[in-house]
Amino acid sequence: MESENTLRRLKTIEGHLRGIIRMVEADEYCIDIIRQIQAVDAALNKVSTQILDNHLNTCVITAIKGNNVKEREKVIKEITEVFEMSAKV
Amino acid sequence: MESENTLRRLKTIEGHLRGIIRMVEADEYCIDIIRQIQAVDAALNKVSTQILDNHLNTCVITAIKGNNVKEREKVIKEITEVFEMSAKV
Amino acid sequence: MESENTLRRLKTIEGHLRGIIRMVEADEYCIDIIRQIQAVDAALNKVSTQILDNHLNTCVITAIKGNNVKEREKVIKEITEVFEMSAKV
Amino acid sequence: MESENTLRRLKTIEGHLRGIIRMVEADEYCIDIIRQIQAVDAALNKVSTQILDNHLNTCVITAIKGNNVKEREKVIKEITEVFEMSAKV
Image 1 (cartoon, rainbow over the protein chains, first blue to last red):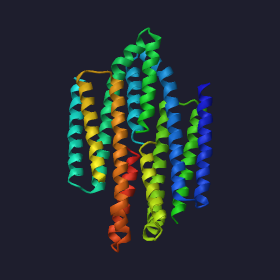
Image 2 (cartoon, each protein chain N blue to C red; image 1 turned 60 degrees about the vertical axis):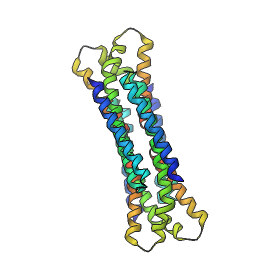
Image 3 (cartoon, rainbow over the protein chains, first blue to last red; image 1 turned 90 degrees about the horizontal axis):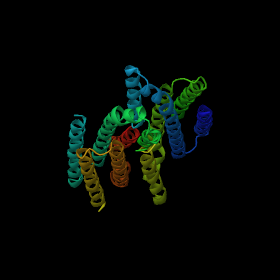
Image 4 (cartoon, one colour; image 1 turned 120 degrees about the vertical axis):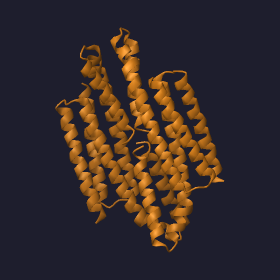
């Protein structure tokens, strides 16, 4: 199942984030902490991409093949919005 | 026409970029130059989003409504790829 | 203390991430999940910026005022590297 | 000279951008255009990083070694600001 893989990745990221919290508590070197935060960022981007891919292959195909114009416009607008946001975060 | 708007934005960005080149030639303050480059980046992201929106409303709808499974898979894969890349640049 | 604030923010992000995990477990709408991941991304960027600001005001000032050229070059190179990476993640 | 290299890179990017404008005029495939815009984004990030590196090795060292506290605070604040922005564009 697709979401099993997504869940596993998110739980790994949660563990990574807890490691970063321990680094801050142990007063580790700032740059090392920033690099770990950037690694978490990159991992989150991979999860988002995976979720979007799944979304395109299910909901979006269904909405576009369907006859509900409003629903079709909605799913397309959402993709555009998360794409625009992804360049900003 | 959609591409008229895209063209106009891109030409504005080209003018902005030429302004940045003149700033470097005039040896202006580094941070001011970096801020202008970041403004160009943000403007390019808006153009990309506009192009993607247009693409979703034309080619992607056609491909998904069509019967060519390979074509459908191709357009979906492309969206996933540009989404993943947008988080990296 | 600066790191108290950083810690508090990171723990808030950890809670946010656990909320996302529950959303995936509850099979919530893909786009809503992606938006929450993007919110976590934005929050992580703020923490990184705060840590960098603290680093510049402590280690970097000490290294640049000091007489160890190698150490000075190291801290400058590190800032350049995390800056370059921040545009990619 | 450092800025020669920066100028050369920016002029190459300007040429790249003009190529993208021609692609839009020729009504080329949307995804190909988005990919070229993303390549320009990545190239701009490299130029920004190069300019920041130069800035750190000149103005920032001078300001931090100097006795003007306000100037020192200003250069540090600027680095933090462009770092925060770089994650957003």
